[in-house]
Amino acid sequence: MPPTPSAPAFVLARPKDAPLDPPPLYAQLREEQPIARVSLGGGRLTPWLVTRWEDARTVLGSPAFSTDPTHPGAPNDREGQRQGPRGFFQNFDDPIHATMRRTLTREFMVKRIDALRPGIARLTDELLTGMTELNGPVDLVKHFSLPLPSLVICELLGVPYEEHAFFQEQSKTLVDRTATAQESAQAIANLGEYLLSLVPIKRKSPGDDVITRLAAQADEGVITDQDAADLSAFLLFAGHETTANMIALCTITLLQNPSQIPHLLGGPAQVAGAVEELLRYLSIVHFGLRRTALEDVTVGDVTIRAGEGVIISLNVANRDPEFFTTPDDLDLARANARQHLAFGYGIHQCLGQPLARAELQIVLPELFRRLPGLKIAVPMEEIAFKQDTAVYGVHELPVTWCPWPPAPHSPTQSKKREQPSCM
Image (tube, rainbow, N blue to C red):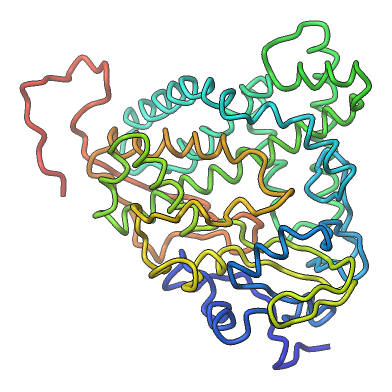
């Protein structure tokens, strides 16, 4: 059944002439009909689309909504959606969600993430040094934004980095909306099988890593070995694809707003605030967060009935002028930027957000310090954006920069030489 005018088709595509902005239709709905029906799956479903910041928080923070994609009426893009293993706990409600999440909570405490910062800085330096040794335009995605979070998450888990290409391929399948349910299930199985083999290895030769500690929880009967493997797979998937895309999109955004770059080169508090604004402005969860009402709930002026699906559009809610002044402008000094919903809200909000923040706070300033005169090497219209994946980003980002100053520790570096202009 074709979509009716009262239920426009839910599309993800951001405008070609403004690829960092939400679809204009949804910004219009936010002002005129902030909770509106949209058509999904060619009219198979007509879930509610939530576009206001306040309403989004209400839905995401309410226990009356389920994340389980197998509920009848759940707003799935394809039929036959599966939950996957319980280690991928974002698709489960409590008590399974709470049990699985609790096994990882300590791994992402601020104190533990702060201990990772020197390692993140070292990896950042190594990758940027490698970029400076290449000739011609360099793909920032291939040589920096993708390998950096892969290296970080592999070190966190205790996974050998030589396996990163395998993990990257599986995670691409998991975020590809065109992948079949069978392909997604196979990607999860591939990750789980490999990581399951690591659990007994870590048990015999423990290290200071997540898989070792998950193996210990399995020994205590809190989880199973299979849970430990699935939780690790989930972290690999969630921990590198999102940050990789964010680094690339932040680079594009800052190069389009060069007057904002100095905010990244100040003190820690200034850098932290700048990262929050970039998270708000970009909001890369591309297909929205999906929920199903477990009971009748009134949100705003609309009653959502039990069994009805809801899509929360984070990128539109984070541009709500009722909460953020001039929301379509990038303002790295914005006072209330941290109240964004880029990581979700409520009990299901992103567990790894402290790690994502740390990576961005370290990576972005260094990128612009180490690569002076950084610029995109192709016209914007030639950049291919990921319009059909769960996480928004770019496939490639060719960049160039000034050849001076050379990378730190270079034998040709001279303090007496002045930096030339770079055009």
